[in-house]
Every structure is written in C-alpha cells, then in structure tokens.
Image 1 (tube, rainbow, N blue to C red):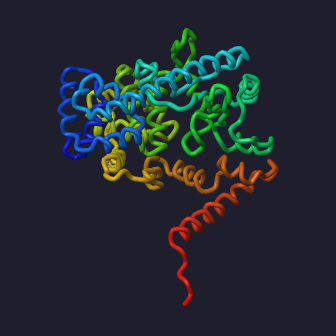
Image 2: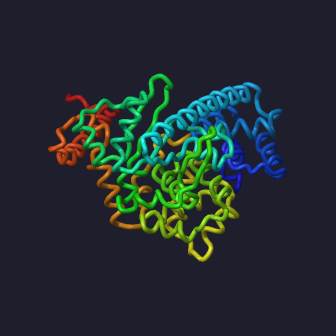
Length: 397
C-alpha cells in the first residue's frame, strides 16, 4: 500500500500492525513515527481497530523516543491492562477445558488464547474480551450443564421455550462467571446461519491441531480451517477492524505451507470463496502482503468482484473521520458468490429471530414460526422510531 493513500497516523498504524521485526521494518517504523501529526488521532485509530498491544510492542521497542510521552504512557498502561485480562482469560480457558474434558465432552476453543498462542506467539499481543468454544450440537446440553455446575450463568435469562428458539435459529449462547468476570460464548455452530451451512459444520472438526497452554493440551482448528475461518469471520464484519486482518496476516505468515487447494475446496463447499479472496486482497492492499498470499493464488485466477470490494473496504478503513457504520448490506451481499447464499443472508437479517427478539417477545416454542413475522415488523418500527427521533414531524400550521 502506498503511504500517500493514508493519513500519517493510519500509515504508521498499518505498518506497525504488520511489522515482521526486520531491520528494514524497524527503520520504516521510525520514519513513519516522525511523520505523525496528531498522536490523539493515532490513539483513536488504535482503539477503534483493537491493536493497542501491537502498537505498544512495535513503538515501544523501535520508536519510543519519537512518541509523545503521554501517548507512550497511555499505550503502555492500556497494553499492560490488556495483558492482565488476557492472562486471566487464558487461565479461565484452561479451567473450562478441564471441566468439559472431565465431563467427556469434545470441545474446540478458537480465537482468544489459542489464536494468540499459535499465530502471535504471545498471549498478550492479541486483544480479546471473551472465550469462544465450539461443541457438537448433540453435546450442547451436557456442555452447558457442566459450565453451569462450574459457576457460570446465562447472560440472558431465558425460559426453556426461549432457549429452544435460540438453539434452533442461533449459533451460540453467552455464559458469565461472576467470580472470575469471564464470559464464554458456547457455540454449537461456528458461524451464524447466514454464513455457514449445517451440512458443512462437521468439517471444522477435521484436521485439528494441538496447542498447549498453561501445561494443558487442547485441540483447536487446524491450519487450513483456521485460515478459512479467519477470512469468513472478518468478512462477516466487513473487515471493520484491522485486528481481524492482523489475525489473517499473521496466520498466513505462520502457516506458509498450508494446503490452499484444500482451503479453496472447503470455501467453495460453504460458499465462501469470495470472502477468502477479499481477505487475501486486503492483506495485499493494506499490509503489502503479496509474498504471503502468493501460495494461495498459485494456479487460481483472481476474483475481479473480490478486488473491487477490497478497494471499497480499504477506502473505508482509510477514511477520515472514522466511519460510524462500516457494516454495509450491499457489501455483505456481494461478498457471497452464490445467489442462494445472498438470499439466506437477507432472510437471516430481515426475518430470522435473533437473541434480542427472543428475549423481548418470549414466544412459546410452538409459536416459533411467528418470530419470522414479528421480526420484520419490529425492524420497520425501530427504523421509523429512529427516523422520527432524528427528524421530527413538521408541525401543522
């Protein structure tokens, strides 16, 4: 990416986020730090994109004398606070995995500590706020009961009918441990129904790899499935945060020998080839990562639609001021190469019940189908209220 296309603050942020620690990279960090005009704007961007530990790590090691003292102090304190939180959550993950293992439940932790350990090599360099754990749907009730017995409680207090509706149309439940302050997202599907097909879910359990954290060995997504998941996860959020792109960039660096023929086959089976192509294109565009993405494109043509969406997303990330609503319905539709998947996404957004609908309406499970009628009505009402609140009706004369 040409630095001329970004503000000095964003140029430094992008470089520091993707730095590989070489002498050339360190020298470039110092050059870009000297160009920064507004350190408060740089901090605002770092917070927005959840890359505070990476900024503290890179600038603290290679450009500490060029950073405004109050900015360096703030970054150091925020990074230390994040490190404490990461270590606490890592300890909680080990405890949770012991509970589930003791109950005979096979579970896959993903994102959070496992991703930090595997592709960052340091638990404190990746920001995360909760724990994500995948279990098979047939073991969901036992896994939930084991966590409740270990002191967790549902974040949303739902009755059995409501919970059955969530399980039918959702993909995870949040559980909170009051004593430790930790939140676990217990998944029975890796992604929401708009992004994945039920027939594909068994694929996440294949080709797993082992990671040892705190002396406890646990299995997580294998390299090929992890790379696929990171592209889908970032795509689901329209890549509104650079931290998700950092995850992908570092995973590409870590798994340089990943089997891309398998990844593309898996992506095609789940209708996610364009999402993968967009993620790769963004690594190239924003992080100058052509050497990392080259193995993925070997013997495969570029996706022109993906390149156009990459340009749009990259432009948004460079915008000043920071966009308030980076998620875009049109971008989401065009990120799906199959018309059927576009329809599924539209249905999921406009009609399929979300947790907030179920918590608010509380219909008996026998009336679950009514959510598909009431949610569109609720969305229309919310939109009308929002519009009239911002633009009151003119008074009659």
